[in-house]
Image 1: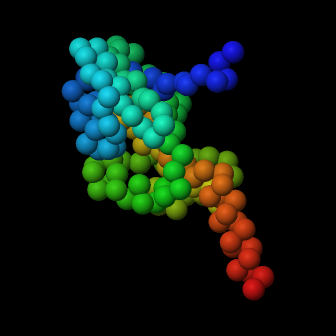
Image 2: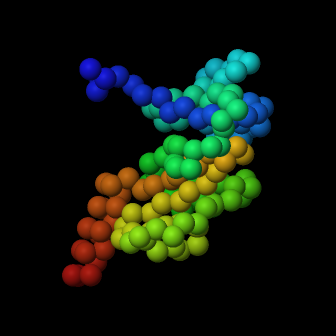
Length: 140
């Protein structure tokens, strides 16, 4: 029924003006729509719906994950724009600066101005290619 339909990530915020600046200027997303109660942004082939709510920032889990092959570069860019990264004690992961690493998988977590938790993570295909490349180099 829904397997062929697009899903939209929805994030609650308290202040739409602060959110607009963060999502447009800090994250570099393209605004598609804005009204008095909500903003919509384009992110790759997805849509991010940001709406005003008194419950903004109450989610204690990751709200949105971006799958990116260049996690380190994006972390560096976002840090340069004032974003602070979260550090978690996670099983089977080590921390290298702001990156959490498990084998070839790398992830980083950060929050928006309302405390919504976001993550960046390498796609499985990148992790697989990195492992294959490392194996080929070690046998050469």
